[in-house]
Image 1 (tube, protein in one colour):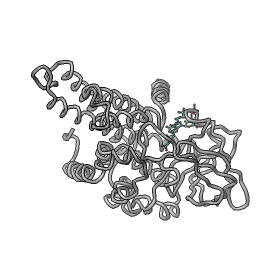
Image 2 (cartoon, rainbow, N blue to C red):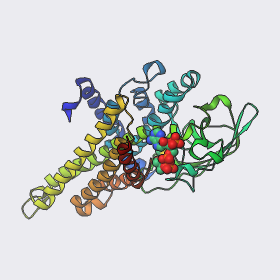
Image 3 (tube, rainbow, N blue to C red):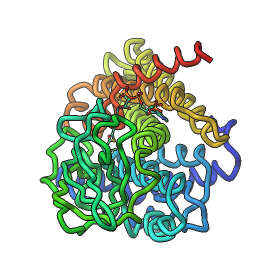
Image 4 (cartoon, helix red, strand yellow):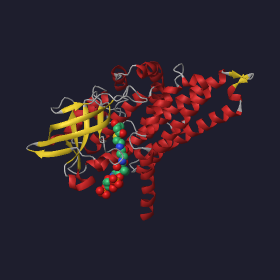
Length: 383
Ligand code: CAA
């Protein structure tokens, strides 16, 4: 898809591809076996501008556009999905919320730390009983002198326990539904904040996921981001951007699987020839490549529209839906092309297959994306 990228974007992509191949990919199998949060490589990514890609330079970011962001995120995901998840969340949710709704003081305090990779940011919306139905969250923010007391438990927090900054959605007015949710910035170490154990997941082991519990945790008024009652709409519009990141990540994982399958099918001989020469394998590779390109185009479209200031609820949901399902299908087929070897840890495709699965779940399941697209279709009719 080079036709759509400037020379500068192509050069940046090459530089990040080289970095990812040299520094990130060699760690991926070890991080999968012995999970740990990859601080060393994250710090290097921060130095390269990858942890604050669209954050303006005046706040320590790289000041690039969303199209460049998805191109670079794909490169990291092709090397290791866990790094890409951490990158996507810290860029796409806390930083974008600070940029769109933060006060100047909040931006100056947090953005330079997040963009440099000194700090990682996390997003706390889901709860043990409220995932897809996010409005049903129960965490309370009770007004007290000078601020609020947060009480409740957040689930599935990417980088939970490792991140230093948490954007927490809590109800300031439980009777007001979506309009009763407000957003708060909470720093790790706040009194009354504790972390659950690291979840034992199918894949993406290094993108540590924990619950976060708040027990009468005091946050000052100055820690509220946006107005009271604006938190849900803010979270939803941040997720529009976040979903473009997950789409780019899905493309990266799928591309890595295709590259492995293509090489293997070129080398592996059966019945006197390379197996890709058999239509059963060749057509599979063709379908994998087509799915990846279609997913990338949907992702670039959403990014391109976001760069131009359009609301991208529909386009981001389509990109995330299609790309995540493509990643699952492509990694499934890659295992099939490699046969028995694909099922072992001698090759990375079984890891890609496991890592891809959650892209259909986090930042809104495929079912939620379909619901969002369906609603947008009818909203267009009403206009
Ligand atoms: N942009 C702006 N505003 C939006 C919006 C968007 N994309 N989506 C909804 N809103 C607004 C609506 O206009 C509405 O505002 P009004 O009160 O002014 O009418 C308000 O938000 C409530 O929206 P709905 O009426 O549509 O609410 P709902 O309850 O019917 O459905 C939903 C909302 C789309 C299903 C939403 O709950 C949803 O997206 N659920 C999935 C949540 C999700 O993606 N969670 C992932 C968490 S992050 C994560 O995975 C962990 C991690 O670490 C990465």
